[in-house]
Image (cartoon, rainbow, N blue to C red; front, side, top):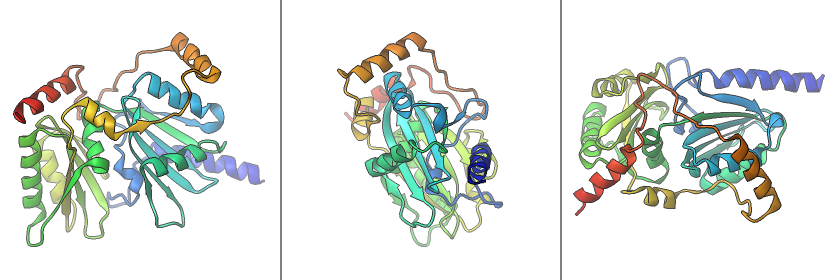
Length: 296
């Protein structure tokens, strides 16, 4: 009977991955909501931990230098975790457990994430993310933070923060919250443009200034905060991240996994979404050049 209940719980949690993680009024209460949502339901791969070797999965992502998001739910441990990966390294990670008010971040969160990956009932959701959105989201974990000042309304604060991120051309993110600090959505910036607008009520919206303003106006008693990633090159971004796996390159296990990966390597492309511009191959390089020239 207990085994049957556990299987039902796994199926139910798998369905939840494909639903927006929000309340009826389009707000998010979980810290794992800080990790960008999938831009296409057709692009995501939801699997049970019993069907894969997690070391191989991590090594594969690192070896292929994928930029993606991974979300993990473990019904047995009543735990959830999420991870932002930039070119094969962890740029942000968060972990939480039911009954605990404490949220873990960074390496500590990653350690807990790996521990629940060993549970056979764990469900893993993996999806590729455009680099522009990933870098913008990375500012939530490593950037400087701007908070709305007293006496300034949300729309004015948004306009000031948006102008700053557009003018500096740095990766950044504006978070829209209600009076209870529940998140209504995110506005992602990269290279002087809006790279994405996400609402927990409506999903991904058009990446325009008008959509961003609507997000602020939609949220009742809204307040905004903004973060900016202080990095002017991919090397500086990678210095903020850490490796997903400690597999020894010379070990037999690593060699076997690498041989298997090389024989099955496939080109991974960013799924299409009319509202989220995909990052062109040269876009990040152009951004590096522009911001470095501007700093001279």
